[in-house]
Amino acid sequence: MLRRTVGAATALLGALALGAALVLLAGFAHRLVSGDAVGAMGWWGLGLLVLVLVLFGVSGVTLWGADPAEPGERADQGQPVDRKGPVDRGDQEEPGEPEGSPEPAGSAGPARPDVAAGSAGPARPSVVAGPAGPPASVAAGGKAAKAEGDWFDGLVFLLVLLGILAGGPFGIAGYEALRPGAAAAPAPPAPDPTASGPSSGAAPPAAYPSASPSGAVPVPPPPPGDAAVVWKVPPAGDPYETAPGAWGAGDAVVHVRLDGLFAYAARDGAVRWKLPAPPREGVCAMSPGAGGNIGLVGLGRHRKPCATLLAVHTATGEVLWRRPAGGGGLAPYGLAVGGSTAVAAEDGAVRGRSAETGEERWRRTPDRDCAVLALDADEARALLVEQCGAGARLVALETRTGEERWRRALPVESPAAAAVVSVTPPVVAVDEEDPRGTHALFAFDERGTPGATVPVDGPAGTLLVPEQVAETGQWGRPVVLGGRLIALAAQGSSRAHKVVALSLEDGGTAWEHATEGTFPEALAPEPDGGLGVLTVPDAGLALLDPATGAVRAGKAAKGAGADVSIRPLLVPLAGAHVVVNRVASAPQPAVFGLR
Image (cartoon, rainbow, N blue to C red; front, side, top):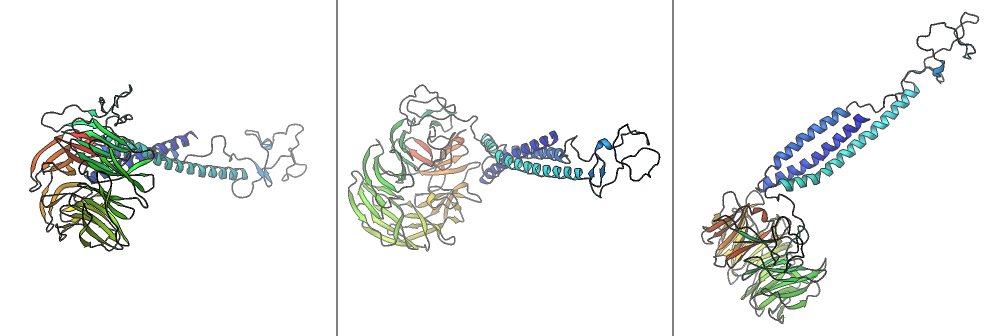
């Protein structure tokens, strides 16, 4: 029994190691394909596989040939048997008893049938062989041993299966500990980053040395010549919760989260203002940008329509006005601020309101069977992408009056998703449901004359496009500067490896920019007309000339690459840059400042 117990325990340990090894090797393969640094994950995974082989080998040797019957419990001890069954051992001849020795007085054994009457010697019992095959007691013992072996084999199989499943969490923990940039120790629960006053005696999280009264966390200065991560806001909310986005507001950034809006100063991360969402409501839509210090957000309850429209002053956090949106509520990508006009796709119509007061200025009811897929606006023009039946079209309106200026059909023949990349000049991205359909960006001039058609998968690589039209799950925000469409591009994997600029007239490549050993993660237009590029593994910042792709300036924040999570946003502000991690989970901060 001890031998079988050791074998089963060894099989369980081997299965645990196998589960952990599979997770580690899967993480290693994913980072290798994505072009990330892999560290020691591969060696640890191979080491665990060697341990698995050793443990399963020990288990097999231990279990091989193990007899399920215990010593002293064997049934084949050779009892005498007559034709009707085994004979009592008390009637057997004892070992060493001389043949023909007299029976004890008073013995009552039966007479021997094979001895003639009157012959010398006492009558003795005869040991008669039973039928061919094992005795009944031996057969019963064999069946019991087989049954015991069957259930024991099933138990070992169950232990191996449970061990493989239980090894998964150990592999995940090992992945988090071994991946490059992982924190040396897990950070304890962070305090509310929106708190504007000092904490009530609670110690700051270990990952951040001290917490300022503003709620942002100061960071030690970097070596001379490097970029600086000067402050961080710890993550908040549920792990891996995706924030809608952010706006730049002068010298501050407004972080739009599910649970509300929070503004931080670019200089030190101090909380300028906060606007928590009402109980049981969350932010479900937002305008791509803020115009005239006014941004739009939508609020809604869990799995309910986005039913309330708010206009927020980005400098003060004041709610200027709110309006209910009936019926189906607000469209997910249907809010924009153009000059002094707020444009919203709501309840089957598009409305233009005063951005300051919310007073309705105009209303456009789409044609029958048409719905708005996306919109954006600037002071002069509002662009709508509408799906009408199986087709789609781009419509340009005058922002202040809602008057239609022009419309152009898009090459769509099935349901599609769309995004407005630029209002002036007009550029839209379209992703059709039909795999053989349209997956491209389209450029137009001021009068709606078609320009370049740029396929998402083309000679320049796979372009990273807004998330609502990103088939691969990897997305980025292209920008339009100097008559060129500038986007991140991937080649051979979903990880972007270069920045490309394409002509809006013919789609030809104007320039490409790639740096040795780093990967571009986000783009943003600079206040001076340049192009900002955020790179990893260091939180690098390169400033490019949009006309030529030449580097105007560039610095790397050494050791700060671990602060960049997936789906980061780069927000250029006066004298600084802020990175917003849309998906933030410890140890990555929700927001951090670069200088």
